[in-house]
Length: 332
Picture 1 (spheres, rainbow, N blue to C red):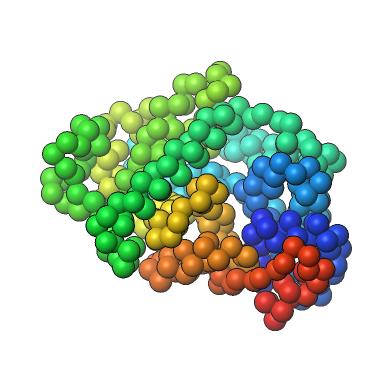
Picture 2: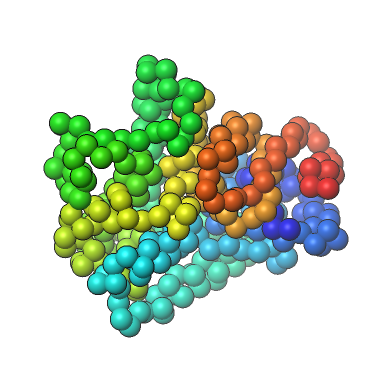
C-alpha cells in the first residue's frame, strides 16, 4: 500500500521521536510511505526551529519513497497532451538531460543536503521564491473572493461538475482567443490555460533571480515554447476544448480542491493544499488531521473521473505519545 501523510502528522512523528517506530511499523505492514516534496517545503515554513527540525528529520528516512515534484508531474501531463493533440509543438529530438538534472537537484541538493543539515532550506532562497510567495497570497485572496461570491449567490449546494464559465461582454481580449462565443467551459481549463500562459511569459526571465521559470524549465526540453504561444487561438482551443480531463487529473485537481475549499472558511494555508492534493493520484491512502481538508477532498472525490487515494481523517492531540499506534489503527 502506498501511503501519504499530511504535514501535521509528520510533525507529530518528529516531535514524539517516533520515526524509528514508524519505520518498523511501515516495514512490518509492507507500507510504501511516500514523501512529496511539497510536504518538505511546507515543513520548512514552520518558524519554530525545534519543531521544524523534528518534522524534517521524520521525513528523512531512507525507507521512504521520494516523489517527483508536482511541477514535474503536472508538466508531463501537458507534454503528453501536446504529443497527442499538437505534434507541431513537440521537439523531434527532446533534451532529457535537463529534466534529469532538475530531478537530480531535488535528490541531491535538496533531500540529501537537508538530511545533513535540517536548516539548509530554511536559509536557502531559491530563484523566484519571493514571486512564488506573492502568488500564494494572491491565490488565497482569490479563494476568499470566490467564497464571498459563493455565499452571495447561494452557490453552496452546487456540485463541482455543475460549475461552468461563459465569456462576458467585459472579458479581456486575450481571454477570448480560441473561445467559441457563448460556449460554456469548465473552470479548470481556464485555470490551466492561465497558469501556463503566465509561465511561458516568464520563460525569458531565466537570468533574473526574482522570476520563477519552473514550468518553462520542465517543458522546454520536450516542447517548442515559442510554437505553443505563436497562434493564440490555437493555444486557447487546446486548453478550452481539446485536452481531456482524465489525461490531466492533476490540473483538474488543482482547481477542484481550491473550489471545494471555498465551501468553508478559507485559511491562509489552503492555497498550498492544492500542491499536496496533486500527489493523491500516486497513493492508495492519504491520512490527514485537517478536518476542513478532509471534507474538501471528500467533495472532490464525488465527481473525480480519475481515482485517487482513500482519504482518512485521524485525530491526534499534541501530547499524544502513541502517534504510531493511532496511525496504525487508521490503516488496519
